[in-house]
Length: 236
Image (cartoon, rainbow, N blue to C red; front, side, top):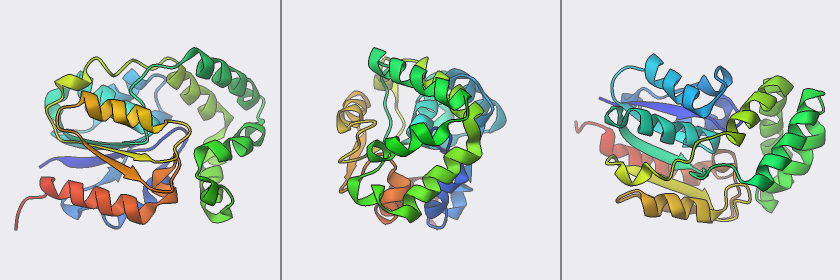
């Protein structure tokens, strides 16, 4: 039976998936990976995941975690039983985002995390959540706990990420694509593109939601994810 591995986004950890763990099928033995905290490149993160986890895998990746999941499927398609891709992007970095990340990296390297992260909240979250201190506080806590060094390394990994679009049409496993309708960091067009490239992909929009799906709309995400995962749970 395939095991479910959850892949957090940039500088996030298991807290990103905290609201989902209670509803995920126990038969799939879900756990959260930290390969993004230990490797320098998206390709290396995917390779480490495949090396450390035996057998068939179900990968659920949010944002950067989705990029790692897509790369793992490129490296070992026979190992991947299914992919759930939340708020992610198959495209390589744009020159505009490369420049923005380069500027942010300079601040992160000086330890000026909040100078970058707090203004970014309006892009990471739907307006209804951007003012919710409980939700944004969980996000900021993960960023600050990761620290400037991780933010530098992981942003560099994103800046040099591979273009996943070439191999997506060759996927033969079930794929769920989920995106916030108001996602400003990985706009809906990115998820629409992934769903169009992958044969028989399921595309679900999360209403009144920005980029941080698992934090902003946990009940909606839980329902969609749990329902989709049932196809991998043995009957009886």
